[in-house]
Amino acid sequence: MTQHSLDTKELERRIFKRRMIVSAVVVVLMLMVLVSRLVFLQVVEHEKHQALSDNNRLEVVAIPPTRGLIYDRNGELLAENLPSHTLSIVVERAGDIDQLLDDIRDVIEVSDDQVSRFKRRLKQYRRPYDPVPLKIKLTEDEIAALAANRIFLKGVQVEAELIRQYPQGEAFAHVLGYVGRINEQEAENLDKGAYAGIRFIGKQGIEKQYEDVLLGKTGYQRVETNARGRVLKVLEKQAPVPGANIHLQLDSALQKKAFELLDGKRGSVVAIEPETGGILALVSQPSFDPNLYVTGFPTVLYNELRDSPDKPFLNRATRGQYPAASTIKPFIGLAGVDGGFTTWSYTINDNGWFQLPNDDRIYRDWKRGGHGIVNLTDAIEESVDTYFYELAYRMTLEPIHDMLDEFGFGKITTLDVYNSANGNNPSRQWKKDRHGFSWYAGDTVNLGIGQGYMLVTPTQLAIATGVLANHGRWFMPRLLMHSNDESLLEFEDKAQPDIKLNDDSNWSKMDHAMTEVMYGRKGTARRAGYQSQYTIAGKTGTAQVAEIKRDEEGNALDDVPDRLKDHAWFMAYAPVEDPKIALVVLVENGGGGSTVAAPIARELLDEYLLRESVNAQ
Image 1 (tube, one colour):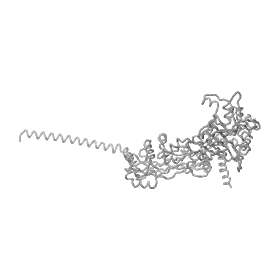
Image 2 (image 1 turned 120 degrees about the vertical axis):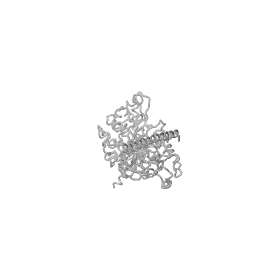
Image 3 (image 1 turned 30 degrees about the horizontal axis):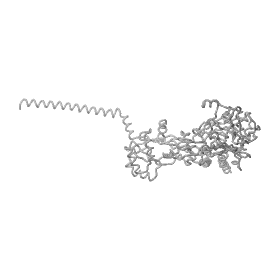
Image 4 (image 1 turned 120 degrees about the horizontal axis):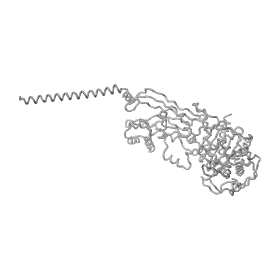
């Protein structure tokens, strides 16, 4: 072997040795890095990663509370919770949503509306892994079909839950309101903890007014789940607190009777118990089925109702604002006689018209030939416009406004009637601010018969009628009767101070004048009062919607389009000696109050008072 070969082998050994040393160092360094990382993760960040691991297999699941029930005064159930099965999708576990929806539709029937609502909900705020409902109230066949195909429907789950139901349907829709799915705007403003796991919220009426107490308190449970999200074990549980039950002052039989009597009409009935202020009936027609807000309102039907000229979604009892017409005359008459502007014996010669000094305009009575010699009692009994034109002119605006204010017109006096309108008890400043003009004497003349700028809701007029029946004693108008949540019962007894007249005998004299409306020889509602088994005090009203030609009795001479016909009003309380009920009936574009609204009121008074008498025996 040559020297050159020996040198070459020595060089190769040295190179190999160096490479082995470098490789060994690299391996050692990599092992040190790995060990260091392992120590860091297992020792330094042990608690952090243990918590992350627990979150992967442990979940805190919200348990929604049972919503409180709603009853009427006699214990009849008005809003309940019924078991239902809901098809929902956990989007994070679903994969291709569109494909999944197609697969589901191959198994059960799912409408386009339901798919559209589902996709809208996907865009709203929600917690991760919260199931998004697709279809509720599944049938047994649908549940079975989904169970059989569950392995092919990744992310799909069928949940048993309680859903809100309204057994009385349309008759109570406006007063009870309804619950609906929590929308994105509501979700942003809600307490996320209080509403965890809750999909529905009160939207209107009592459901909205008493949302906080009907809701209850959410419970929680800590559960162990597998990789598919199925619950393996419940580790900890805090039970939810159910919502409070509420009993309302409503009388279901009276409410349903009023709803039936208004069938086919646009109008409202509001009845009040004068002694307590409890609202016995609050009806608006036409109406809608509130259950559709829970199960899902078909788009075509919703659009049809929304765009209907009859406005079924409008609560006419609380939001409808109308001229009071002649129903305002008893209140103005009291202000006039008690303020010394007239007396019960003062008479005028009514020729059927009134004219202001230095004014060419003629203010006509509803009866073109006039009523002859009339006093205040006659003016109430026969609803003589001319008498009140003259009285209002002599009084001027302020005494009228002040008396109407004492009866609650132009403001909200109810405890818990949701979203009531204010109406309008006009003042000089109001007209200046609203229209930019001064108040004229002609405005006061129009106000004297409840026309012009004054607007009232049926609820306001019913409350004022109850106060009139009480001879000025106020109460707190309310729907709430009692509840197992005692905090709800802590409220003021009266909405306003009692009305004090200078002469208390004026109350009973007005009672007499209003009974003459029902029983007097010329009473405008004598047909409605015929052979009543109790004494009724009432007042008709016919609110003019448009100028139309009329005959001597105030009837239209020509065919009038339905929407231009007068609104029919009637207000009453009975028995006069000890009033148990005060009510108001409004029929939009119904014509005369005496022929349309008064007969409805009579049937309702019979329903309530005669039934009460039978029950008492």
